[in-house]
Length: 122
Length: 110
Image 1 (spheres, each protein chain N blue to C red):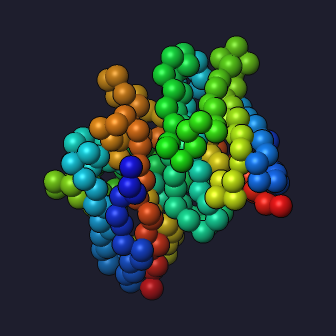
Image 2: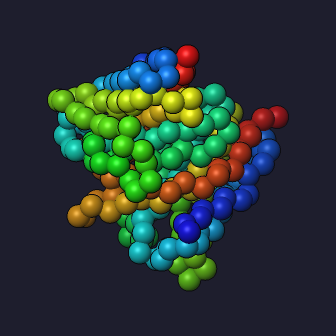
Image 3: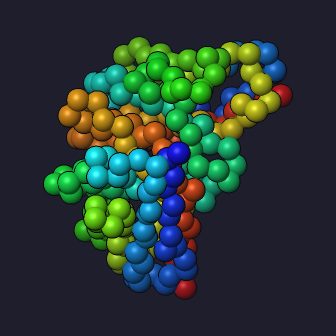
């Protein structure tokens, strides 16, 4: 059974930093591209970041570019999201999400973690 | 990248059919058959219901179906059941090699 378990969420002051982790199980992590998707309280889903299986390709939403860093450690089978210069508008549940491959792209998401809540407030 | 446009809410009676629209642009929905739909119950993670416009993952009821015409995709739920009451989000791959979601539609089963 595929599982994705996020950790590292919490309360942080504006301008602060936080690192989220995602521990996958039930599939061969090293062969899948992964994403972070967030959802602000009472709002819709927003794609945040993508990383290919080898970390060769990384993409970010404009709203987090330059502040967030996605990374992975295939040896440790873990996915990370380093969040710096946090703002109130970054307050959200952050989901670790597995992507599905079609040809050379990964156009949709098949498994989601339960999410980690990040609250940015003074 | 602007969010895809969905109606904020739709409703239907048990047994009826409902359709949720998802309108994008020629840079996303109109460019690829990579539209997917997700169901989200309160406090839960989203669940993939439809991928590549009209395909259902294993285990998803055949009451759920998808289609696309031009820049607009649609999700139809037939034989509406109380358990279908949830938020629904569409998503599309884009020509910028990124992903965009719709704003979400709250489905109420009357």
